[in-house]
Every structure is written in C-alpha cells, then in structure tokens.
Length: 186
Figure (tube, helix red, strand yellow):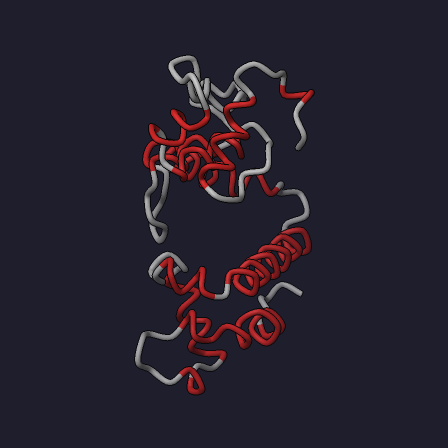
C-alpha cells in the first residue's frame, strides 16, 4: 500500500538490538514500536558509534532490512521515480564528507578511511592515487612509519585482504611495491 509499515523491520531488526537505540542506563524493555518510530524520525546519527559497533552484524542486518523495505516502498508508491532521484544527492554529499574527513555525523572521523570512498572528487572512480611506497626499503620500515588504520584502508582500496596484525598488513602492502596486483593473493 501507500502507507509505511515498519512493524516487520522493528520486530526482526530492532528488537534483537534494542540496547543500541536506548540511552545508557535506561531499560530497553520499555523501548516499543512507537519509540522506534520517534527515534527513526530523528535519524540514526545521534547514536554513539560504539553502540552501533557493539552488535555490528545485527545492526548491519537492521540497516539492510530498513533499506530493502524503503526501496520496495518507493517502487510500490512511486514506480516512475528511480532510487537515484531520491537519494543521489544525499549519497554524493555523504561521499564528499567522508572523502574530506574520513567520517560523517554519527561516525568517528578517521583520516585513513577517507580513501575508502569509491568515487573521487573528479568522478573518475579510481579511488585516488594511494600510498607512495617508494620511500620504504622494507615492510618493517612501512610498519613503523604508517599506522595500522592507514595500512588497512590502503589494502582495502586495492581490494586486498586488510585484516590481521599491523606487521602482516605492512608485509602485504609492501608486496604491492614490486608485484602487480593481479599476481598477488586476494
């Protein structure tokens, strides 16, 4: 129909992670559907990042369920309107903000994450020039000079495994100095 019905999103996505939506010290048993609607109308950016990440998988499932429902609602109620018509400007603004600061409202700004935006300012979509590895003679030099988050962001930008200890990330990234990406294990 033409009316939002967020009850299934609440029951399947919010109930398992009520603690994310409730202020510290408050009892989440009293957080009902009406509270969820009020919270949603204010936006999700006012929740601390630590709460969102405490139940990361469940929070992501909630966001996916909400996005899927809203996309379906848009298709049912405005079939001639494309998703890009509705959210295109917001996505562009978000990417600009993330690229500039490495974060956005509701998420800690980390400069190392600024490079993780797929598109670049000029729209070329190459993800930026990346880290210059030429000054480093060994992976250990790279590890000492670059923090773990920056190493992780660069590995992610290149499409390589970005987890593990900082020393492992440095070794993996250092391998890209002399080895073509298509010859490296993903």
